[in-house]
Length: 190
Image (cartoon, rainbow, N blue to C red):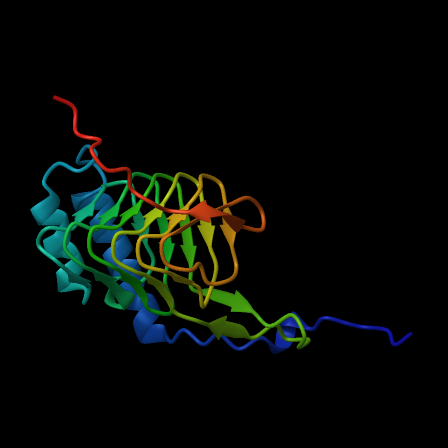
């Protein structure tokens, strides 16, 4: 068997100096000007900070103060979308969150990984798309290159490495199909 050797001394960082400086400035300003604000209060202020750094966020989207956004210029949020408390949005590649979509507390959106088949472990970027009316429940992990279909539900603590079909419910590690998502008629209480 061939002896394998990882050589991280040959690693080349794909994220440039200018992006690192922008990321540092954004992180500092978010910590100073947004993080102390409780939960979703002063949401317009936080959205303005994100827009200053290139995020495309709808005026009716919600970002909690404790959410962490790695590169705001790679974030798109449609109307009534939400990044809840403690969400970690690691987005060196773009992340698009559709309308009426919730990313629940402590979830992790990860749009990058490393190529473990190469000895220098180069960074691999792959966008994430979470379509309209989807729900990513608490503490879920969404991996690079994943699309969560319209109306899909990712269960709490699920780990998603493959696309999720529209209007389905998935859960577990790795996430597997549980059932179709359907609405019951007449659920309004009188």
